[in-house]
Picture 1 (cartoon, one colour):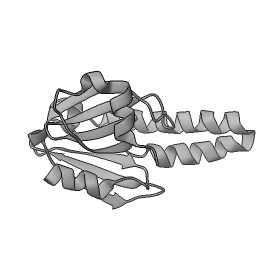
Picture 2 (cartoon, one colour):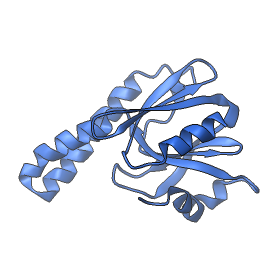
Picture 3 (cartoon, rainbow, N blue to C red):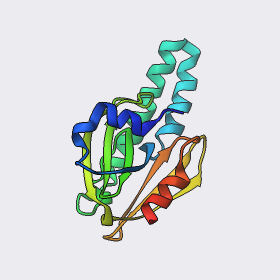
Length: 162
C-alpha cells in the first residue's frame, strides 16, 4: 500500500499550512466508479490491455457523470468535488486532492479545503470490491464515495471523530 501522506508531502507540500499535522489519508473515488470500472475493464479486457484501460476509463466516467447529476450545488455534499481523490484529515482541515485517474496515486492538485468542524463523521461499509465511505457534514448533507479495500479506514474515522 502506498504511503499517501508521503505522496502529499512530496507533491503538494505548498498546500500544507505551517505546523499543520496530517492525521489520516484515504484514496477515494466517485460512488460506483470502482464497480463500473471493473465491469467495463473486464469487458474491454476481451480486447487486451488497451481494451481494459479504455473500459476502466469509460466505466469510471459514467459513475462521475451520474454522481455529479445528483448534486444540488447548495450543500457541502452538493458542492463536493466528484473526482478521483486523496482525502486528508489534518488537525485543522479536510483536504481533497485530485488524482489524474482511477489508477493514479499522485495528488495532482488541491481541489477543496474545508474547516475541520465542517466534517462531522466518516463511516465505512463493505461494498463490491471496495468499501463505501460516507462523509457527513455539519449542514446535514452527506456524500458517499468508493474507497479501496486495503486502506486505513479506522484511522481516518478516528481522526474525523477525534
